[in-house]
Length: 464
Image 1: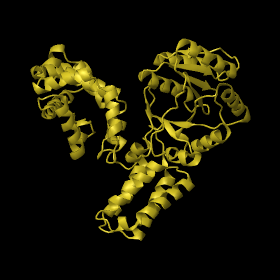
Image 2 (image 1 turned 45 degrees about the vertical axis):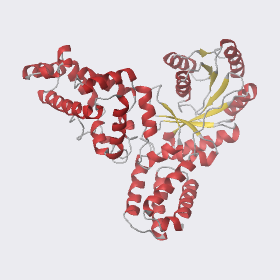
Image 3 (image 1 turned 120 degrees about the horizontal axis):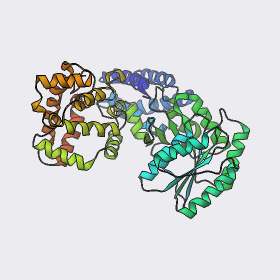
Image 4 (image 1 turned 90 degrees about the vertical axis):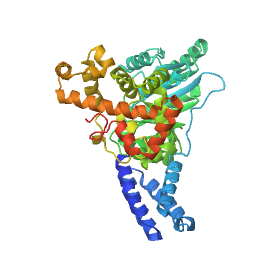
């Protein structure tokens, strides 16, 4: 995940500050030197890193901080605020046309994920109740139109295309079509190139001049680090972009682009791609990202992801069963399915305050759920509904059916009982709100227990 190395370096720097009862100016400057090195290692633009640490130092050596009872925490608070400011301060939303449709022009280099993220953004708006339409304006790349049609079909959004007609004419006709057919958002998937060239820019300028898009969004690959920032700067100077979609933020990237692009271009990051699935797109919140970088978690994004993925009806039914101590393996399968809809377990866990900065990817076994499900699917319907009837002979048959050992079945049975007991305690037998409050309080006050419930390797309720 992006920022992992940066988060670790910052955490080590702040440990030294927190260990001191009183800070001197030399302490702050030494910590900021380490912060600057950490930012540079994360591929943050040199001038951005220098200006950032200068701003933090100027605020941190003030009398209010030095004389504070918790000066170390005050410095961290300042770093958090400056990080948030560096990335734009507040969420930047899409522009909305006074008269539909709102025209969004998508641009970027070839391979940046422009076509896929056009579909991702269209899906996000569709789920919010809009009627988007995708437009194939890339007439050069082989199979570009077909790719857009495929992803359009996957997200249930229509695709307008006119073959290899002039992109300007395609865009103009698409907007007319959208007006006639009630589409309120139009996404122009323009042509990309392997590098920036005059021909590419001229075509984009021609499309812009013809249709006057409400938004020009640049899709850049976070994996390319400072190159992504240079691309954003070039596009902005030549075309005039309104915002950025940063892709592959879930990958093994140092994250410097996210911290540099606003400062270098003056344009906000509006969305981030967080995975390969078409639903893996999130609005960019600078304050939440700053918290995640500093290992403070991102509980608001965690809650939003849960609300989008969890079935309220099933949650209510589960609560009733927990109150009556009737949680079974069918319920556990439902929980697995809902967790999987939330996306990567690794990324989800790292949103939880108190946990995200204490774990490594190696500590989380994503394949554990596959093994759990294999064992459960080897059970009969009666065994899933009544776990207590599973005796030694049934365990041997279940183990043989899933290709695992009896010890694996025993481990799952033991940890299932532990989880059932734990969840029953939070249910309280009195309805959803009470359980939710208990769960929230548990995550805030006892991150180690939350860690157990979220499936950590070597210390999880399933023992894998």
